[in-house]
Length: 244
Image 1 (cartoon, one colour):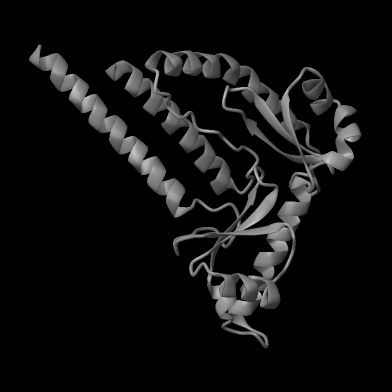
Image 2: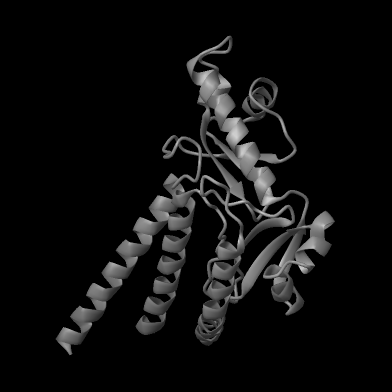
């Protein structure tokens, strides 16, 4: 039972660290679905085995997609109009997000086309990853201006923002605000920026990176908690071994 627990915790920790690294890098391409322990311990083991069996191929496909994106003169990635993100599904297979209106382009793509044809899990969405990233940039340029200069200096709606990330799961730019209520949301949409591509969530004040690819407090706390639990579990196991 202890070995099963350690295995599940290690999977959670590895997934969390990968997600944190990607988020802090500002790419937000990979969205990992954590493995939630089932009531049946044997089902957990089977699911873990399936995940690890599929994970290697999925990571290889994700890397091929990343390398296949063209680059601008400054080295930044140029994302295709049909591409809305990618990640790992709960069974360890690749998970693609494709703009519905551009599905034909995706199917004809040299790298992504064959992956889709082979039956990869995919979700049809409305906005491309490039559109969401551009909106993220525009919003935080406005927030920066509202906080520093101009006619709306010290705008409370701008100061209420603690983070903003591209969330490929919901195909939106998620704006984290400290005071979360209808008035603050309406104020943001009126005085900062309004777009159907924006969604809001309550967030703490801790943030990093000026609005792009933040390592959020919640993610940091989850990472630290996972590390602490694993360390405690290892200590308990060693003590039991020593007392036998």
